[in-house]
Length: 201
Image (cartoon, rainbow, N blue to C red):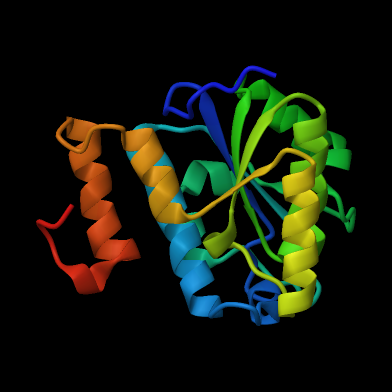
């Protein structure tokens, strides 16, 4: 498969089960960090007009609603979110897969909670179907280091590229001096690396 560099024009963002309850299951990294990085991805998508598909599972159960700040950043995507009744693999749920196909994008950025249940299966299935998939690992997480490690290995073996929020933003920005690049580096320092302060590249 030909690998095409991810840009704002050929990429879609998929946020899978970033719900108030599921976020509490993250133990391999700080859950607040994962939440912050997922918000940064949402802000990046808003800045660059990247089509975004949001999905949730059983919002009326322990999983709870999508993080309110994601809904605030991307209100239209949140309103159009795919509410799965309990199907574990979002890619196997026709409404979700059809929403992704409707974006017309073959490059997919995915983040999901938890990695070992909600992210692993759709990322692998999309990759096997011919999509180029980058899984953002610091905007995802698992209940244990062991389950996270196994999931990362399976995704990698299936052709999913594992990445981090800052790496992904740098790839899409390509040039910090452009108007979009300036907005992204501002987002990088305000949200992803706030301790570094502005003006450092």
